Length: 314
Image 1 (cartoon, helix red, strand yellow):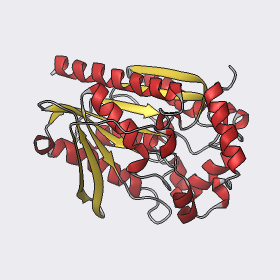
Image 2 (cartoon, one colour; image 1 turned 180 degrees about the horizontal axis):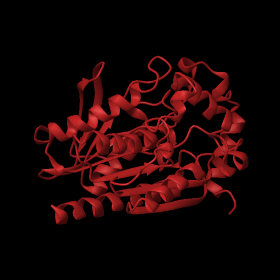
Image 3 (cartoon, rainbow, N blue to C red; image 1 turned 45 degrees about the horizontal axis):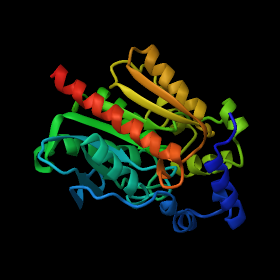
């Protein structure tokens, strides 16, 4: 397919602005200069938004809780933002989180996990798991049904959602109903066709991903750990049903689709969709990309179905 006209226009605008490449910046500079909020559109009203901190393995974790209109208990989505484990925050995903809360009629708990390189692997994964566990254990206090809790995220957040699903299965402390993986990072490797085809010119570059991974990992050895590279897990059976969305012009396309395939082979129920013509980051950009809005609608619909299925199987 050709590049989506809206995505093409966006890339041309960004090129004209002449912003420096992510991999030439320090993490601090990258955090200050990377802001896609103008592409998200206007935030929708939701029933209630609450900022709070919850206990984490190394101190408090900030979270933002979006509660839809109506009476609970609601199902919940624990959401992890993208940004290569180095950039991004709760504001980055404000618009998608509100849209998901309204459309899936669920509480969304957005998690501000610790970032690298100040906090390298496994800090983000440990915080992400702690947040999911907190939601299960404190469900009554936030109007949530503990039997209908999903994890989800985009890019590095999709990586963390996949990892939390594996941790939950391995630790056997909590049970998750679903995993929503939006163009997830699944493997510390750059050997795929999509890395070659989309190395440059489509927002997320290969050089940026190398920069992100190098900040996140303590060593090459860490990259082989399934809690960093979920695709490298020996066994993917017993994981919750999954939605995996990818983009055609995204270096991460093939590893996301490979993870969906591995899940299927392990007997996990999977809905996988490639958004043709799309670049990385479209889930953050429903205000500028029609397909971004469509992806959020699809994710909300998949969540809704999964939550209904969890009620039926209780």
